[in-house]
Image (cartoon, rainbow, N blue to C red; front, side, top):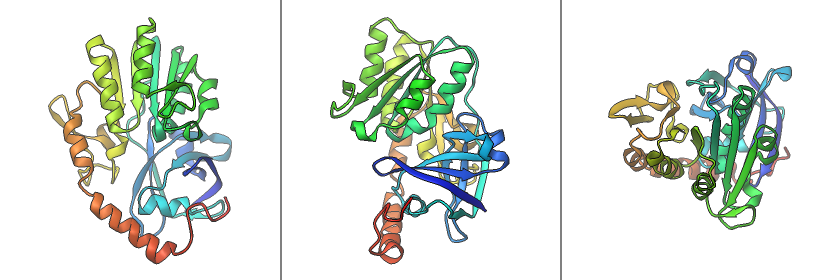
Amino acid sequence: MSKILEKTEPAPGVFRYVIEAGEIAHKARPGQFVIIRIDEHGERIPLTIADCLLEQNAIVLFVQPVGKTSIQLSLMIAGDTILDLAGPLGNPTEIRRFGTVALVGGGFGIAALYPIARELTRGGNRVITLLGARTESRLLLRQEMESVSAQVHISTDDGSCGLHGNVTDALSFLIQSGEKPDRVIAIGPLIMMEKIAELTRPLNIKTLVSMNPIMIDGTGMCGACRVQVAGEMKFACVDGPEFDGHEVDFDTVINRLGAYKKEEKESSEEFEDHILGPCSLGERAP
């Protein structure tokens, strides 16, 4: 079992957990993830490791309650325990000197960028980070990203902070200003990553995208995370999660992403009706 050491809510409806992780904290590398199972009746879900706190033998995970398990996890507090924690899984982000690297994070995807930015900077790269959110209150890890980046550019859908627009617009403006990066890494919604890849393709800028949004089992057994890359079938959890964005068949992935929405909705509603009851998310003290 792994104990929750700390819980905070850095943005509305987004929870940050510090969780005991033993050797995982010392072995994990940027871009990798863990599989958690809350209890013996729970499903296994993947969560990207947002940081490793070596002095506490702990890892940092961000959780956004959107399905049954993430809702259940969002109700847990410091002192609660998670039954299973497996990892680190997936292939880590390649860290070496590339030159100028633009990191593009959209919404909840920002949480996975911090360790990547930190290690790329330590590796001698000039890191330019572009962060996007619906509104300023939902912007994650701004100060942390500023501490490990040469530049940070903000964009919000409602214009409450930074550029009134999205991260694709921000990257386009950056390139037009003469800051053409040597590499781009994008993490966020599939549509966002597809647009970033479309932007960089004619410019011949190497662009990596993370297929974390389509992972379920996390070990290659279920096949739900399969993705066509350069005409070959890959599994996001064992072959990725990062792939060349110019080679990913986004249309197939996006179409399949909604395959189980009906079942996911029914499971969440059943949990809320029969287990959650009158409680609301975040009602328990952190």
